[in-house]
Length: 321
Image 1 (cartoon, rainbow, N blue to C red):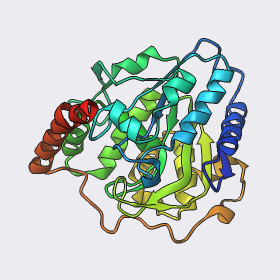
Image 2: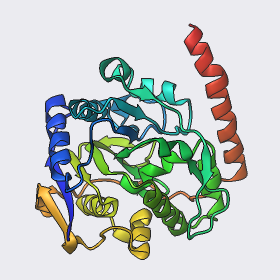
Image 3: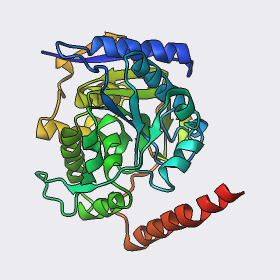
Image 4: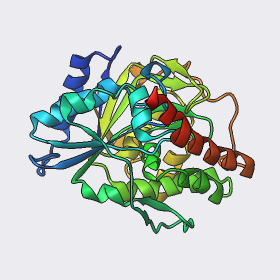
């Protein structure tokens, strides 16, 4: 059976348009076993890498999160949590800057830090790999990535977004442990994705990030919303749309090698917008120069210090003013 991918054009973050897309996605991917049932505990995993406003395109747009919350509430889902592990800053502070501030009041959503790191045994045998054990509290996980270029991994799409479930500064340490092998890093991402197994991925590609992502890039009006259960199929379609050589999308190449999901475009069924060629763009810019996957010791130490200062001092001072 072919993997299904839902694509719709979207020219702006209009709440009604996004909510209609989310409802369509829930309908398309409902099978014999429903995606959600009343009483489910649902975790939303957006991209909350750093504390920037939505206009910077670093984080998943709050309009996407709000639409998902509204549809879930209509289905009788009362436990909706949002979690991620920002590179700099605490989850509440980063979420506030990203525009998520009113979600708790409007939908009863909780911001829940990731806890309980547990070892994850994977084929790549990477030491010290631990993932948040707290995700086991949930019946369903929805993956909500932001479409971005990535100076190390070329693109960060649905598979890469789940790396955020590694807690805190374990992430840069893992960057070092793969010994600058981007394909090995990609294979690790596949094992994480296999373990997490979100029930659905909804991609924020309305305004993407190009050039020096995932933080210092520039906005790009890709004008797309996309959804699927097969993350490899979704990432394959989106990579084709921006015309990036597939062997340079290291997480996708790792998925092909490890036979995770559907890589063959002939075995992917598009719904909504069915003609990839009509969606393709020729001016999406990747990072100006590739960056090693490994952080040098100085950069690693600097990262730990910046996080300590941000959370222990800067955020507390801001909160007291």
